[in-house]
Amino acid sequence: MNVFLGIFSAFGLSASAGLNAYIPLLVVGVLAHYTNLIKLSAPWDTLANPYILILLGILLIIEMLADKIPAVNHINDLIQTFVRPAAGAIAFAASANVITGIHPALALAMGLLAAGSVHAVKSLAVRPLVTVATGGAGNVPVSLAEDVASTAISFLSIIVPIVIVILVAILIIFLLWRWARRTSKDASVPTER
Image (cartoon, rainbow, N blue to C red; front, side, top):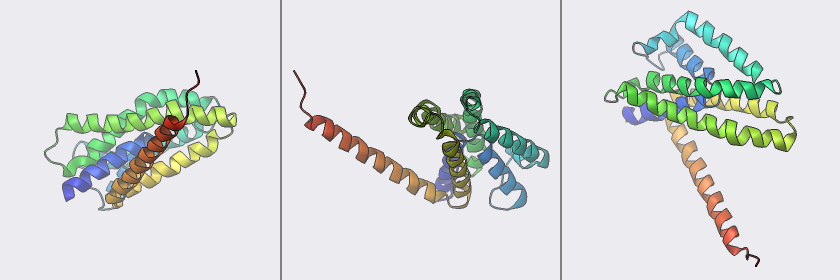
């Protein structure tokens, strides 16, 4: 059971890095430094170093501010295209220490894919749609919601990783339901000749 919980935790943390690169790394580092909730093995135990925690805090503040300023947020998303997947890879590999049989390269790749996928959906689909639909006015509330979601997912991934599985299952069911509904609607609409 610990292996599955470790996998759920690792995927949750790496996915939350797709929303905000530094929140899951900071959560992992703070919880590893101040609690027994997560134990990091070398070299990932560096995340719990007080100097690294301060650096992550500074980087988090910079990203949060940049993501709230119109026009700068798009540049930030472009820069974060490289940072978020890397942060996801680190978060996955650092938290996957329960999974002893997994090769580090595979752990890094899985984290990279999870964070990169979430970031791609966010920056290529959600944010442009919000910008167009609201004339840019909705970007700040959406950015705040992403930060809150990233924080909640990061903590849940460590404290109650099974919740992440339930949330993902609900999301998949919802998306399949929407897709089935849309395809049945499209099939019932007559085509013009």
